[in-house]
Length: 171
Image (tube, rainbow, N blue to C red; front, side, top):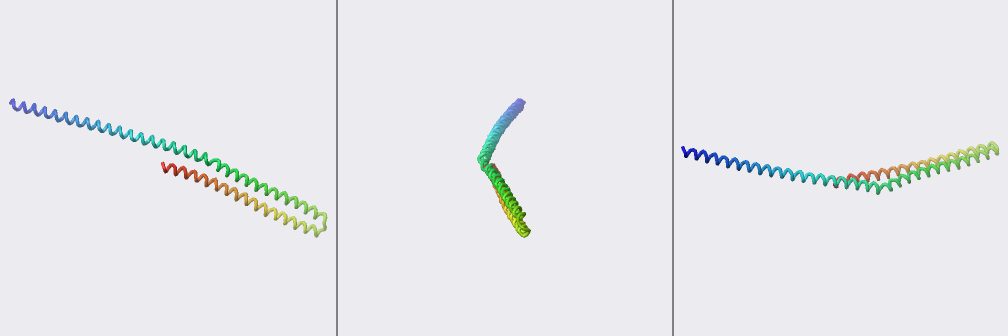
């Protein structure tokens, strides 16, 4: 009997040793898993911080690009305005000159005979037609200049947008 008790005590001791070893291995595994989780969190935090810095850098770069190109855009807008104003002033000048000529023709016509009045009327019509043609040409030139300026502003805006997209893609 005493042999069996020794075997039972030995079995219990051996079971305790195995249980303690398993507990130690489990604790070590948990500790390693916890350490790896901490490392992964740290790596993720570093990556997120890097991305945040890149976004800030790209935002600053986009702002600088806009600031650099703003004078060009504003200058193009000012040029288109000047072209439009100049065109309208030329139209006004031509119309005024035509009106003055028309008035001269009318005054001459009133002083001449009816045949001369008919000739003056034709000249007035020609002058007005010519003034209308010139006014139309000037208005078309002004319209084209405004369209060209709008295209340039659109192109500059697209380049800025593409530069911003390219910069964001490069990040």
